[in-house]
Length: 240
Length: 240
DNA sequence: ACAAAAGTGTTTACCATACACCCATGC
DNA sequence: GCATGGGTGTATGGTAAACACTTTTGT
Image (cartoon, rainbow over all chains, first blue to last red; front, side, top):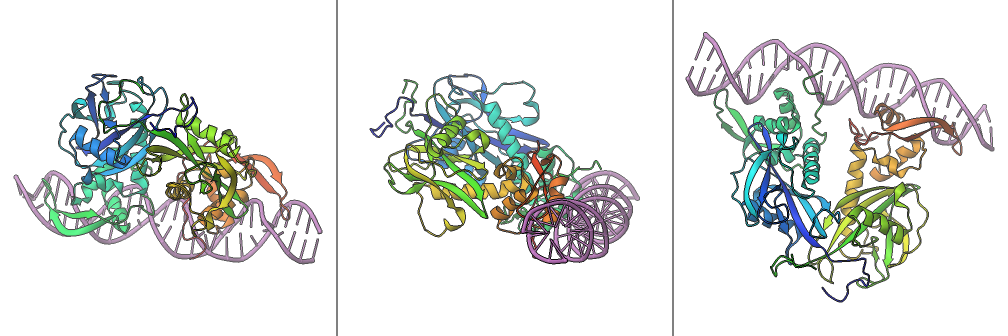
């Protein structure tokens, strides 16, 4: 540390980490990537993947690197955005560690290999985390809760749902993303209309894909729009 | 620093600061609080208020303290939320400083006194900042841009606009907030209907207030709702 | 032919917009 | 009375929800 240190005993340097809430949709489940910690503290407990930010990298670059190191995932294929900073002085028993939480969303990914600091990495269904099955380390329960809320709301007013689909995708696949994350059935025909009437949401490829049974489905790619107007609100669902 | 330091030359401790984008509506202008820096680097240049996070405080507490110290504002009256972390390794010429940006919104506030690190503090109209009148220090231009976008969008789907009004307020005052921040006239009667039909947005007091001229206006307080559904979208305005 | 999923059409009810109009106050 | 802003009523057009119906494939 250098001599421009603020001359006050009230200020101290901190360690800065990034933590990742990585989500994917597999089947009819929203999954989050967890690791089993290979180091103290919280050794052996489940946690979100993450690690220290290095000297010459931005926070975003650090998140990409940890994505690679701890989860073996190439982040260039994913949607990655910052969620926020968590800096309670007591959140880490070792001392002051400020963590920057990132949200990563991607299509159904291969089961990841364990990383350096992690004994193993695995996908956990979000739905059964609430039941105190496995308490996450640090303040990761709070981070995960915030991440989930962010995903659910971003689905409404941005085109982020396409990040869960491998390009190209069918409208049914896209609809399934909404249904899984909102936990609510959507009317296929109305969903279709909404998506296609929102300019820039998806872009037709002209190709088709054969489902296991049934009529072939048209294939689409992500459009160039990010903000949806009007937003794709989850109304009352089918329940009126 | 203690001996649990990760044994790698690639990792280093960082200084952590909070920076504040404090907005208010005065007359027909959206204003942001700036300081003139009293210390190097960027001595004499305008910047967002902020400072180092102290040992035993949370990030949120740090933001409240800086609000008080640098701007002389009691943060308990304001809406304060985290905007995000900015950690480019080159954002501060002194070395690695990660800053957590906060967004603060409040009713028309008294002109603040200068703080410890600031020569003076003043309200600057947001509208004339774009013109390179005064380049802000550090990456504060980017933070301010992000803060503005956040405010404009939060206005649509949360009840945050009430944070700009002193309790109790009239619906005209609330409408003016939207008009100033969106830069768009709104139909008074339709605005009224939208707000009153959104349960929990505002709560009538039964009191009235006499405007300079015209019929008395009913007074309201903030309701208990935070998310607005449906959101209060800025449509085409008056231009159809 | 039948099942299953994609995709189209149509009805209906609701709601936002736009704007006309009335109300309460100070001067 | 008149100006000014607060507040109410209402016709109209657009659109979302619900659902019937058609299309295209595999078996």
